[in-house]
Amino acid sequence: ILNVEQSPQSLHVQEGDSTNFTCSFPSSNFYALHWYRWETAKSPEALFVMTLNGDEKKKGRISATLNTKEGYSYLYIKGSQPEDSATYLCGETGANNLFFGTGTRLTVIP
Amino acid sequence: KAGVTQTPRYLIKTRGQQVTLSCSPISGHRSVSWYQQTPGQGLQFLFEYFSETQRNKGNFPGRFSGRQFSNSRSEMNVSTLELGDSALYLCASATLVAGGPYNEQFFGPGTRLTVL
Image (cartoon, rainbow over all chains, first blue to last red; front, side, top):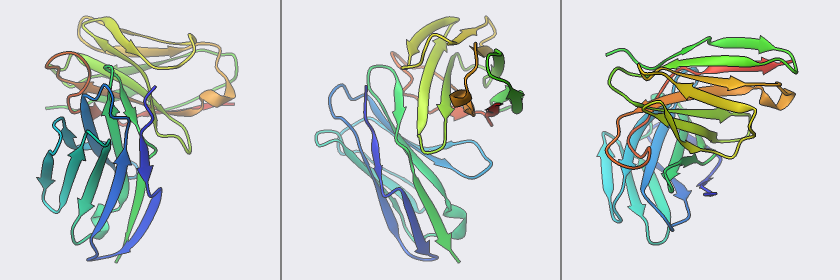
């Protein structure tokens, strides 16, 4: 069973601040690393799916990096906005299952 | 393109009963996965179906079962409900390149199950 861990569990930042979260995962049998944003009362939405060591992906103000050898991924948000408030989930696909961490709950204070 | 739909959205059952949840994937998606979320837990993988076959299964007791129909719609069944089964159940559909569900998952709105 894979053990995906995310830190911090929750985070409060001021509007305009940049922030980052960490996802650590077992690096054996790695297939892909997923990041999802889950806003309250909505469904989780995919941000990135990364497969290659050294991958860097960007979507607007949000970017992510991947290190499969040491088993971690970082998600960065530049210039946080109130609409970025959500839970950010990461998940690893190992042996054909997708295991998620417990998420980082981000609150952006206007 | 219509998104993933789940029915019902809310459900209240009592211990010992059984329940069936339904999921209709995005048109063209043949992989459907089910997840359970309880307070303090991340999304726990239940199982994944592809072309009417269960390909992968998480670490849940046999009371949790599912199936997939030829139109890719999927149902999840929980028998002999326990209080601890109260949770949000999400299904997600995905396209498939090869092997496992490592393509982007498209989630439905979930079914909130309360067991009294």
